[in-house]
View (cartoon, rainbow, N blue to C red):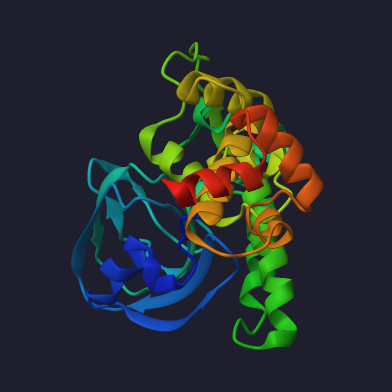
Length: 296
């Protein structure tokens, strides 16, 4: 499965700030798809973000009263004010005074997974709202918990990641809008198809479930099953069985492993299960198939 950004340096906004005059005070990963950082800035500077590819929650801790987002010049920063920057947003910021601020970075895959688990909805129907210098008392309370923990200490990491989970939940409940649902015609996106195929091929030994594969695609189980059938022409269980049979045929033809080993390596568990499925699909027993391939 494709890895999800987790280290602070995996996130574009963090890297942009690292190249600026801002001073990094501390930073840490907070689990798969999330990281946190705390910054200080004293020099005047204009910064820009162009479709960073991840979501960012920004909280001003001190200062920033003279800073503003270009194009929204009537809104100014200040302690206790938040910005929510979606993955595909575009922004330019004029930083005119000293400011300390906190950033929480969230990978789109992580937010999509939470949408499936918490809201039981199709992630592509949700859109994170772009918001500038808002005030939210409940978010302030959660961020105080983040600020009060030592992110590098193992004993505090759980508390920090738990607080970040609360922020995720808040964003899903308060910070997203629902797009009009569109009928599914094209099936899974090419990148998602590749991700699912790679995951299946590297986990054939495991007892794969529909929920697990839907999680890889960041879709609800219902929508994943429909779109998978559209993309591959058969339901997930039939396609996975075909991949296991292909692995078994390859091992029978190219190795001297006994039937029990072949069954285990191709995800069938035992020789009798492999023999039954193989005979139904191929029209020959595994032993007959191996003999015919060797003669050929």
